[in-house]
Image 1: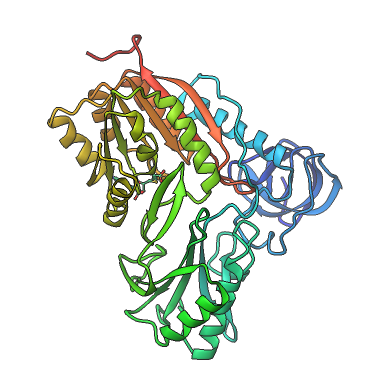
Image 2: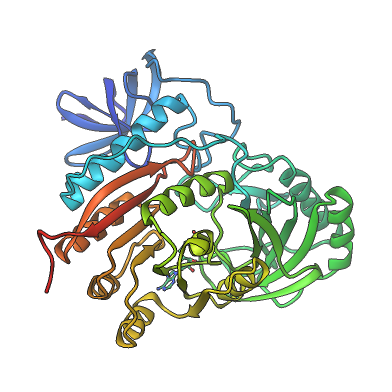
Length: 456
Ligand code: SAH
C-alpha cells in the first residue's frame, strides 16, 4: 500500500474526461493532471483513496510526443484549459475517444463515430467572458476562478478571449479603484460588483459590457461609460445585471441598460442575430457556423417540412434552416431569448417561423396535443440533456428525423439510448470541437425512425 507524499513512477496511458492524465503504479490507478499520454513521470501522491490516488508531477522523466509548452502564465492555477499542454492534433484524438467511449459505455450506441472536426480557431475564439471580481484584502482581483475553488486568479488576457477584452477589463478595474466601488465577498454576501461579463458580436465588432451587481444600481456609471467607450470604441452597450441572491449562478434576472443599446447584433450563417445579455449564444461563432452546417445537412430539408426546434435560444439553428422548411416552430424557456428569436425572424424577413416561450417538456406536450406533426425535430438541450418526457413526446410525434446537438457526450449517450428504445436509430454521430484547449466537446447526431424498433 502507498502512503501520502510517496513518489511513484508512472506511464500515462489515458486522459480522463476532465482532462487529467491517468496511469498505474503497481496496478494502482493514479490521476495526474497536466500530463499527456506517453509521458513517464515521477509523481507525488497527494491524496489517497481506497482504489485510486491523485498525484502531481514531481519530475517529467520522458515527455510524450504530444506535449507542448503551455503559452499561458496562469495555466496551472486556472481550471479552464486542461489540454493546453498538448498538441491540438492530440487534443482532437482525445475528444474523439471521449465521444466514442461515452456513447458505447453509457448508451450502448454502436454507430461508428465520424472523425471529429476541429475548430477554425484554437485561441481567441470565445466571444464571451464572465470574470469574477473579488478582493484579496488589499487589491481588487479580476480574472478566473481557480481549479475547483472560488479564489480569483488575476488574469485579464485569457488566451481564449479576443484581444479587445483586456482593455475593457483593465478599464473596469481602474474604475473600481478610482471610484471606490466595493467588490463582492461571497462569504458574507456583501460588496457590490460580482462579475464583469463581456460579449462581442464578432462579425460586426459590436461589444456589450455587463456589470453584475449585488444591488440595484452602480454609482458613477457615467464615468465608467466614458472610460469604456474611450478605451474600446466597439462598446455599443453597457448593461447592469442585478443579482442579489446568495448563489453561484452568475446572472440575475433583471437587466438595466446603463448606456447605449439593449442588445448587440452579430451575423451568423448569413443571418442578423440580435443578442441580449440573458440570451444563450454559442461562444465560438466560427465553430457554430460549422455546427449549424452539419445540423442542416442532417436535417436534409427540401422546403416542404415542418421543423420543430426545441431549446432554440435566440432561434439560430432553426432560422439558419428556415428557408428550406415549410414552417419553423421554436421553443425556448428564457423570455429575452424568445424576444431575440422573434426579432431575428423579423429582421431577416423570415415569415414562416413562430416561437414559444415555454419549458420544452410542457411545450412539446401541448404541441403534440394540438396535433403538430413535425417532419424534423432539432434538440439542443443544456448540459444536463433532455428530460425523458421530452424524448417520449418527440418520439410520439413521429418525426422522420431527429437532429440532436449536445455539448455533453455523457448525457447525449443517455438520451440517444432513450430515443433508440422509443423507435429511433442513431445513424450519424459527428463530434465537433467548439471549445479548443478545454475538456469540452460538442456533437451533432442524426436519428431516423427505425423500422426495427418502430412503436405503433
Ligand atoms: N439552440 C440554441 C441554444 C442552445 S443552448 C443555439 O444553438 O444557440 C440550450 C438552450 O435551452 C438555452 O437557450 C436555454 O435557455 C434553453 N433551455 C434550458 N432549459 C430549457 C427547458 N427546460 N425548456 C426550454 N428551453 C430550455
